[in-house]
Image 1 (cartoon, rainbow, N blue to C red):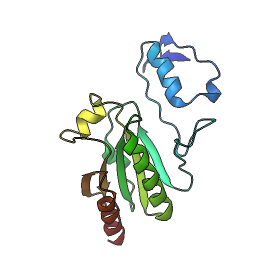
Image 2: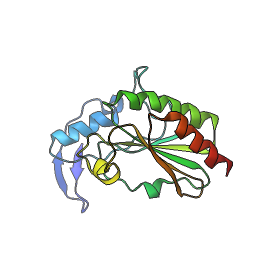
Image 3: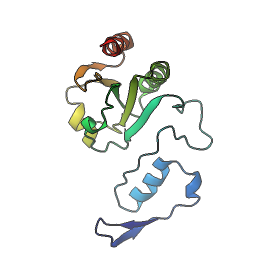
Image 4: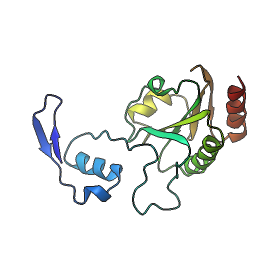
Length: 173
């Protein structure tokens, strides 16, 4: 990969072999090894070749990864007009996050009026965590916005029954 600045000048190079079979996170790591910050977002529903059971299957659900590696994100830009938008703050190392993800995806499949937007905080010192998780004691964490974009709830996602109730209420509005 040739890395260029915003002005178009070559800033460096990173070697990645068989890029067509690498997950975006592997490409991002190669770029970071070359001394650059990587901002990659896979397309909705993308899964790496040979994905395991632990990997989430987003087929049939409105789910998008909007930030990875803890990068800063303005969630307001990702609200889905006319849908209840659930922002799922997670980290790959968070086991409860993976369990919740399966429930959210199933909900989004069953309810076409629900959009899930995933934010990988990476770690507690990341820009995403510092912006959105101040005072939040643990992951997973959800911010649920109604169809009108208004914040309906911000809650610890281990309370899945409360999250489901808020989503149901917002869908009924």
